[in-house]
Length: 108
Image 1 (cartoon, rainbow, N blue to C red):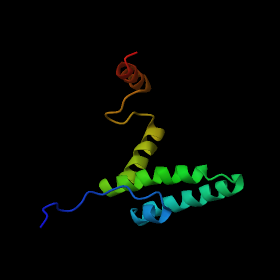
Image 2 (cartoon, rainbow, N blue to C red):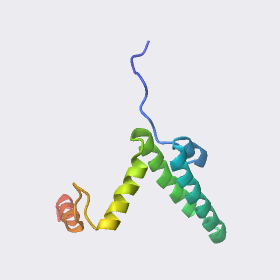
Image 3 (tube, rainbow, N blue to C red):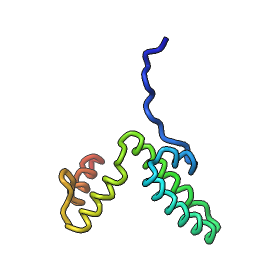
Image 4 (cartoon, one colour):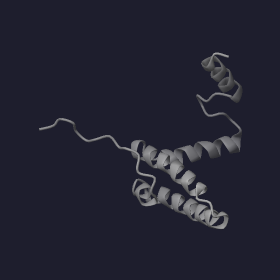
C-alpha cells in the first residue's frame, strides 16, 4: 500500500485537446480564439511554426491553471491595470533593475 497521496499535476502534452482539458470554459474560449487565428496564419504562410509556438505557450498556461487556478485572468487583470494606470505592480522591478541583476548574475 502506498502513502503517496494525490499526484502533482504535470504539464499536458503539446496537443490542443490535452491543453483544453486543463482549462476552464472561459480560458478554453480564449485558447480557441487564438487557435483559430494561428491556424489561419499557418495555413496562409504554409508554416507550422506559429502552431508549435501557440501550443508551447498554452501548454505552460494550462499547467499554471492546474497548479494555480484563475492565474490566467489574474495576469490579464494586472496587465490591464498596468496599461491603464502606468503604475508598476507591487513587488515588480523596473527594466533598469532587471538589467543590473542580470549583469550581476552573469558576472559582467
